[in-house]
Amino acid sequence: MKRTLFVASNRLGDAVLTTGVLHHLLELEPEVPITVVCGEIPKDIFEAVPGVERVIAVKKRRYSMHWPEVAIDLGFVYWHRIVDFRSCLLGFLPAKQRSIWKGGNNSLHKVIANANLIGLDGPLPAKIIPTEFQISESRKWLEEAAAQGKILAIAPTANFYQKQWHYENYIALAKALTKDGGILNGAKIVVLGAPGEEDQALPVVNAFDDSQVINLIGKTTPMQAATILSQCTLFVGNDSGLMHTATAVNIPTVGLFGIGMPKVYGPWGERSLCLTSTPSGVPITRENTEDDVIESLPVETVIRETEAFYRRLSRNLSDI
Image (cartoon, rainbow, N blue to C red; front, side):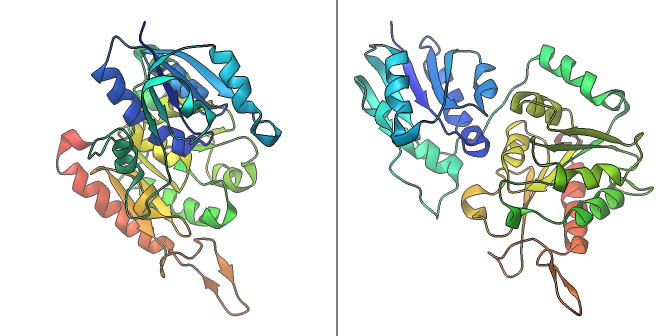
């Protein structure tokens, strides 16, 4: 029986960005089941994809000894196809066809570079498709908000502090968007983040009445977060895995970038907006001097651009 081996990233964002390739392979060869090897964090995203036969979560060992362990776990298989985004030992297992990542290209977005790996000009945008059951379960998290209408999703954290826009800016943004007359007038606010990210995220939660905010910091798996995001109206967040997850479920997404590479990792698609620091490439963290507070990405700019972006999408009701 033919089988495909798909080796994805440990990190959530990079793993989510490979889902477009995974879905393409399943559509191209629906009769060929796929085994996914990935990190422990994105495991449940891949487990939720129909056609994925098995998911192996890599537990990192010293001296890269995790790869021989995984190879033994896989057993002897002559693979129909291997797609390896890690350039690891598994890419050289016996196979009829193999595509092995040989390094990034800072002039190409990842959804294009990932498609190039399997011989396509691309792009293959990230894709996460929650089931009706998962959506039904997510409404328990969202309480009555899912039935009431608009929901603003905020992800004020990132894997590095210099990528984090100040929490006070997120508070000001959320208040501006959800106030009377705002583009999301009266919307509930969902705040997301991973375990251990409470210091940056909880001040956003605490700035709002319990009746308006839903605290999901550290409370969801990546797939649960994806399903919840699929029910939201608009996402605003830092350069992070949650930002890519928002684009993968096809909701309007605003990504905030400073030291990252927006050309490679910016939110992808017509329903996304990438806002960058001035000058580009500097941290979006707040700098305090004796005389002033310096913001490389002022809150007024983000509010104005987010409102304009959302209104452009709203002109076509099918886009929201």
